[in-house]
Every structure is written in structure tokens, then in C-alpha cells.
Image (tube, rainbow, N blue to C red):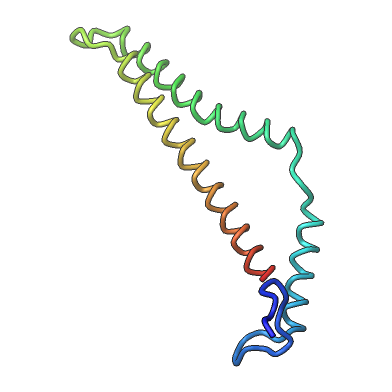
Length: 118
């Protein structure tokens, strides 16, 4: 008789967790998920704002530093434009790194959840 792959085996694999351990782990995961709850709309808007500010702040700081440097004779270079681009690049890199870290954490959590459901 073929066994259902979604249903845990009543006979534990050698060295593997017993049925009681599997049920306990699954119950613990469900309790943890209930305590955390689902993130709402405000959480998503807050994350978008956080990412936006992580780009805006370095860009504005670069532009401000560039304007300050342009008030002094510097040989005809536009520090404002150069530092604005540098700040924008730094801000985009910072936002990309933060989003990648959050995406990695989400995928780890989903993988952990899928392994527990097996």
C-alpha cells in the first residue's frame, strides 16, 4: 500500500524524530505563528517608507555636502552633482541589501514551515 507523502509515518526512521516529536514541533510552530499574527496594511506601508527613507537620506546628505563644497573654489568641479549621485548610489545599495536580507529571512521561514508540514 502506498503511503500518503503529506501524512507523517507512524514508524520513525532510524535516528529520525518520533511521531510525538513531529506533532510537538508542528504545534509549537502553530502557536508561534498565532502569537505573531499577520502583518497588516500599515506594516507594509511602514516598510515602504523605511526603504524610501534609506534612499532619500544619503541622497540629500550627498547633495547638501556637495552644495557646501561648491561654495569654495574647487577648480570648476560640480561637487553637488557628484555627491548627489554618490548618495543615491549608496542609498539604493543600502535599500537593496535590506530588502535582500528580508527576502532571505522570509524564504528561510517558508522553507522551515514546509519542512515542518512534511
